[in-house]
Amino acid sequence: MAVFPTLFLSHGAPDMALHASPLREFLISLGEKLGKPQAILIMSSHYDMAQPSYSADEKPGVLHHDVEGYPEAARSIDYPASGLPQLATIAATLTEQSGLPAQEIIGRGLDHGVFGPLSLLYPDADVPVVEAAIQSEQGAGHHYVLGQCLAPLRQHGVLIIGSGRLTAPAEIIEEEAPGAAPAYAFASEFAEWIKEKAEAGDADSLIDYKAFGPNAQKCHPKPDHFMPFTFALGAAGAGTNGKGAKGRRIHHSVQNSVLMMDAFLFE
Image (tube, rainbow, N blue to C red; front, side):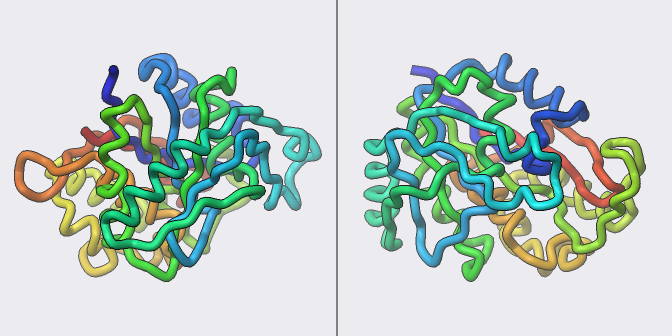
């Protein structure tokens, strides 16, 4: 059975799959290169719970929770992937065995941090999906440990993904065309620092990104969009350097001058 790498994917707006962009084209090509896993477990920055939580619906459907201000077509997006309650139960059990509380959730639906990228990776919606929640009151270290809890799933054909955004600053230049403008220096410096530390397998620095990452507070005034990064890093397992798995930046693009839409692969 194939053992897949873990991924961190930056996702765009709720209607990201409907509009041409470098990120969209990358995700389409990535799905073709990866091949089809047995199932997907994906943590979304838009699913926030007090404790580790996993969707356990057989048919989760989609959650159009933040489409205000977007074209009407965003409300009609569907991604009819099945769920996999057995995987949710196993994920919760692995989490609890590591000393963390966990729960299975019914009835929420997949948010756009899930159906946005997955509709491009696997447009036929023929891979079962379980969504995992962030815990925004916990730090990056907590999410790294949570990823480590679930690393054994990779041996069973499960593709583990963290879906957020490499930068999510409060300041966004709305009038500029997506992908057309160069990055503001503060966002670019942070992105290059992340790339350097990921390539070195420096999990300690990445976990403590607020202390060491240049412009970290400006790039992430809220932690939501970065927590899936350390989750994906942890889920890759231990690296050969005694620190963490090494990562490769497999996509780099910019939207609205400050949104770094980078993707990383860890193995």
